Length: 289
View (cartoon, rainbow, N blue to C red):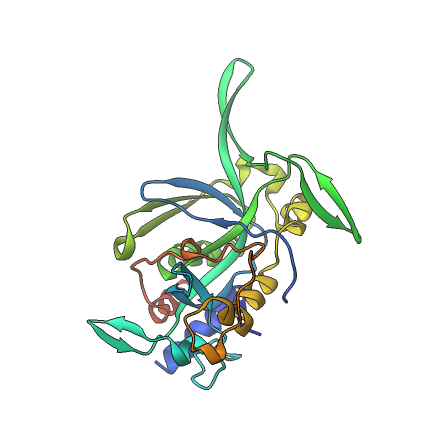
């Protein structure tokens, strides 16, 4: 299985890397921030998966896409002998020279998009954090039956590199959860100058969502409408996905369909940012222990 799950797995991955120097359907939303933009997220559970990405690969149709690299061993480290066709056939240009296209490490997690709303209570103006909901009904499969639900919270994938997650790890280590409170996230800069600031909000501000169990119950239907992380990884790490789009030799290509349903994995799926390596994040996590 490509991808490591949870804080313990992520921590173990950091340690091992430092020492060595499920495909189903569902909607796909990806959350991104532009320079200067601020958003509020509520992570749904503590299932953060560490995966390897080939970012911004120019595909046969001229569009840049990102691919999850299947050359990841059970320990999360890069496996040179893996089946990835991009690693094998698609070089990366550096200083005008072709070099091996090694993937970069990223973390992905499911979250609900939230927003601040003001309202009058007993003559006073108060601010509450509420869910952002879909404008129209969303079809969800429940107990084998498809039903349409109105005002369903918007669930999506937070896909970020080390500079983002280094802000999350201390909070996770301190409270034992990233699901029991909202996070205010701000982005500054572009490209390699991208920086994220992340602030946990007071869990007392949302008493109806102050435990992992309450969060899981509240967003069960919304999560059911979205592709699972395992399915997301399985789909975008598949060789079929690479053969459909990547600039491979003709002998390795599959002809793409006229329209690819749920194709969200374009250039926007990953952001390039400057940040600490996973080795240095591992050291930070140890310091918190």
